[in-house]
Image: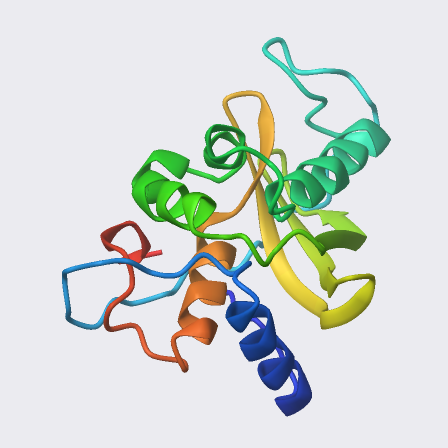
Length: 184
């Protein structure tokens, strides 16, 4: 099971982050409790070549690491258009409504950014990511753990990582999360 590891101060910081409007608020009419589990990456490290995949970004090596860092920063940048954010989230169409709603109602998030500090390629289609979210250059959620997934030739923020952030924002509760997070 992939879990995010946060200190109590990180939880408070994330609450501040949510209040500032950058966290993508779960706008779901469905109740119930979803399960936010995922298989832990167990594949051996990927090759260190930088051969691009036939359809897009490099799947391995330093090119893949650079793409992951760039795509995570772009995804978590509140100034990124909703359509681009959706394309940078694994199965982003599952949460398109949530992302679009938040993008329209997010005037306070101009100073939000994210930076990936470490990437470990854990297979041909997955990587472990350590990242931090900043507000006006100040760390609000430092050293969070996440998963990147290589989907359709693009390194994307893993759905399980994004849904874990939504769950954290929702006081650790699965109830009320978007349907796209159920089972992730």
